[in-house]
Image (cartoon, rainbow over all chains, first blue to last red; front, side, top):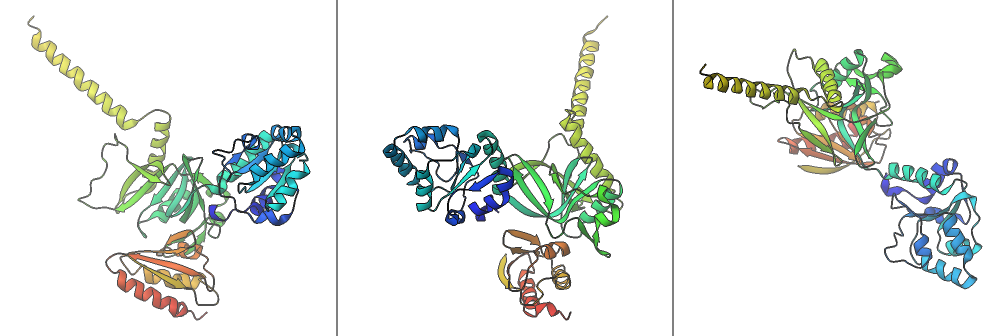
Length: 323
Length: 89
């Protein structure tokens, strides 16, 4: 989670991917990283430290080092002192360039780690950003069931015992894939979409009332499971109430918000003899149709409106036709 | 809504059988009941949910109960935790 990311964690997890070597003392590894962003501090080194985002991971590329190397000893110390006056999480130098020793000495004094990466600056920045984005992505756990139906991630929610797991089991039977049952970890990726996974301990196990815990992968095989899936719609199962207002047209879509991301919400009343599985497949296909630009309810409504308008014109015509 | 801090007092932690005891008890109530450990909140009426907490000996959970029978629920659930889930295994 985002509140315990240290420089050590980034180094341990990413040293092979980012080709990192620690250049100074290990003291700096204890520092916390509080921002998912990466910064090229050229301006700060040159002396402009207003609005300097010092909480970000600093990447020194060829430009920064060429600048520092062009300075005389006094100017170099001055520039570094201005820079290190801020609390900086860590510094990564790209292309395996060996920095002036003054940087390492000053960083040691400020207990800040300096790494060298053999990757190019662009490559380093993009890989590091992806990793940090994932680490800092907001996450929640929800009670429900996540199934991939025809490639559409449907999140089933509803009270305990309403039949979420049974519905998922039926869908698996028909060739769809289970992502997680009961405990769903949802992460918001790049601010606009949600990805659901199972909790580490549960994997693709399910609980079915009357049977107990079952292992879906062992029972149905690898084709029946999926480790993660984008969450594309919430299907809320509710007990049938005669007085409740269920959707009859589907012209206006309802939405629900998870971690600030809007996804379509479909409320399905559950009653004996109702086949939620087939309804689920229709929900998934209908969502796909909408992605491809076909909106059944709106298209039908438009046709009806046109037809009514035409019928109206014929009436006018006949009325004014005195032939 | 009532919140209460609970501690796991049996040596083996909240493994399968104690989890079943918890769920058997929570499903008797009408209230919405959830358990939180760290950044994970689960529905305490879900068998897999309770087990997914992987609450070890000595760990602290927050019990949240909301509904008409909340007082009774909190009292009985706290009692079950105190009695180490009446676990004889």
